[in-house]
Length: 448
Image (tube, rainbow, N blue to C red; front, side, top):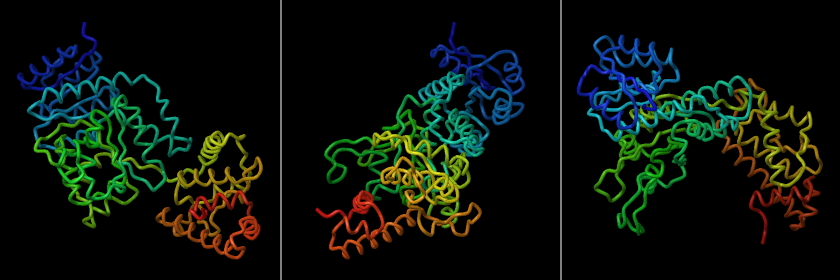
């Protein structure tokens, strides 16, 4: 007996026969339906592991069936068959809850890959989601985010992860990958803003030997590395317009052309993207292509800022103190009540990343088993008050750079005043010698 059972909904006998043969070779039994009504009856009669449905049916359309299954058989992955080039309907199907889509004329390899991924989704339905524990917190926002991640992990739809710097967008992307059917393959993160513009095409799509000066051998790109896995495009807003065109084509055609090559290479990877910028506004400004925006933003997932979930701060503090105490080989220090209150009232323009940096610095510098408010070294004019949105800095990186400059200038003044006697400079600054040494190293002020 076959180990899996598929429901195939199509009114074209040739398509039904092709699907039945393909599925049989994958050890999957096939039940066919010619319209929506017949499909609904089969769904009532027995359980299925996957449903494949055509978009156009005699008594309705595939979108109606996708919605029906989502509401009544949420664990059943549905893939829709669309006419070639009809990307609008395909995206609409993904938004309605379809697992994925496949174009006519059917490519057997694409179909087999899609069915294999869908079967894996069904097999994971009863498994726990232990990896979600990496998302620290029990606030309503985080609980909702966990549930959404679990739901989105079952789909193959492109996800746009939005949120401020430091909220954990890459962590969310990793969880979507880890909980999905592609978890056995590579998760490939790429910071689009960190790659020089002239190298982006080669990095993403690879190059052939001799394609440019320095290309001494063939090199696969990140799309190829992520084949059958997930490609996470972080800070996607930083891509130049010319590269946006090529990225759009790669996503739509599921193929790439390495620099210097005349051959297309097929790639199958899920696309997740993120940026801390307002992508919709960039589209309005003409710096980000609207067609690419709609292609990567099939579903938007917003990661809440830390100030929106202040009830999670205590759990995050305990988590980070334990991590860094273990790294230093010391007993986990306690956080004083005043220090905790200061953190709760601080607005965290750098979000969770900033909280971890603050605690790492504090645990390194504190002289006792308690982390006091002065050990946190929060900015003197730190924005506080959960409703004080007018004072919130827009860019945590700019704020940190400014604070570093102020700190650097004050330390240099003390060192010049004491002729670079660090012990005396530390006394002048009112900090310990250990704290001064840490700051010198952090600010790159240590003399040879």
